[in-house]
Length: 117
Image 1 (cartoon, rainbow, N blue to C red):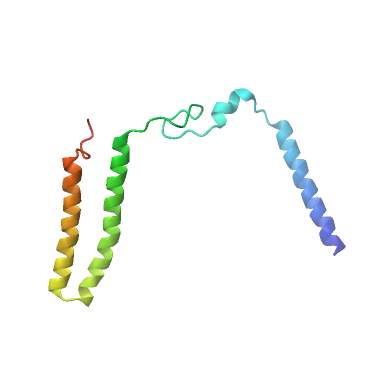
Image 2: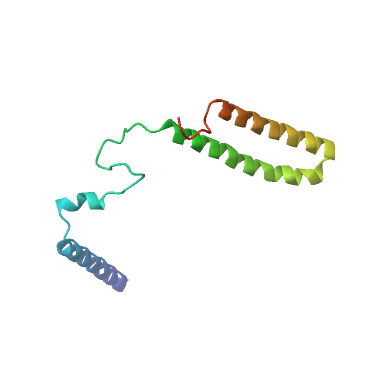
């Protein structure tokens, strides 16, 4: 049991020595603060985070999510064909596609699909 404590202490001591050496030998300065900051989406990380965001990008994201969920809902409908008769399956598909087409018409009517505004 004493050997386990001895080796644990030795491992912790060696890890602390290595961390101390890396801190001492590193050459970071205050000037390198910008290089160490993350770069995301062209925003300046040192400025305010409350920059106005283009609504068009948000609408494109919503459209993508809607059609992404649509793909996830189509797979069970394909499997439903084996369990039900043809008429119920066709009506379900037509209703589903009608909802998608109405959503697409609404997006088109609101000019969400036009890139230039």
